[in-house]
Image (cartoon, rainbow, N blue to C red; front, side, top):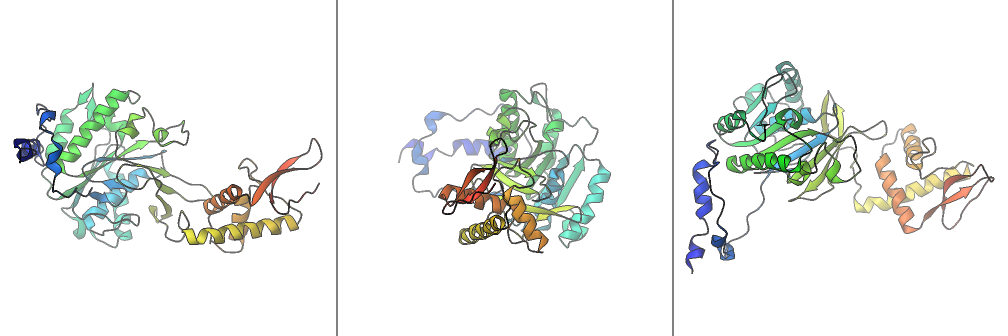
Length: 384
């Protein structure tokens, strides 16, 4: 055994006096690479990545929650803090750690947080006794409560760390939101990266999960890097990124994991509004199990056959609002009081049928008055 093998823990030992006591170590030297012998891992099982909330919020790191205004992201933050404190072990259908939680709310005044909390308590069937001394939501509405200003962390950042370190068994801190707490150039990759590095350092020192909310980009292009406003560093520097979508008349709100370094990407949780709260919608999965997808495809084909037989047509294009097949079939299903397949289920089934060559798009109609419609591959139907 070499000296390097016996000394691999030197840096963790150096950090130990600062971990969990709120003392920031700005002068702490960076790890010395000549001490980083891979032999330090010999004979040791790799550690599990701890999650504050299963698959959604890794511990010791920052998770970004993004959405457009009014979608309910601040509400989800307050509900997350309550779940951790109440030890209900379930947050939107995911297992959660039990412990204590704190919330920095920069956009909502005290009255709004107060009005919301009884509804949250009622939903989880708890009273204040269950979370007393375990959940610490604080409004900083209208105050100079920035964590970052003039290219550096603020005194409030240091104060917050010191305050949080005094909360035993702290598991989660929610920060609402980036637009209020970050007084810098949101489009500057270096500055955003440095700010998030400070937050990740805070999460690591206190061994907590941090959930930071941010506004969605107005110019989303469908890629994970563009889900939030400003530099792509907001996404790149966070270990997990969640996107809350408000939904529409056909499909309800959803929470999607658009980036995950330590869990599956693409996990989608369907939500619904209940007593002014966002809760997991267990009635209809966002993605059908594999064994049910074929049934959905057959149902889609059955509706297509009935539509064609009646002399009507449906389109593959979302721009054809009145004839868009998934919407037409979903509305027909709802009119009969059924709710087996969502519009998203039907969109996915249609795409699989196109991919498999079971259906095609054909041009129908007189010259100058043509339109596109979906038809069966084995029995292409034309009518004018």
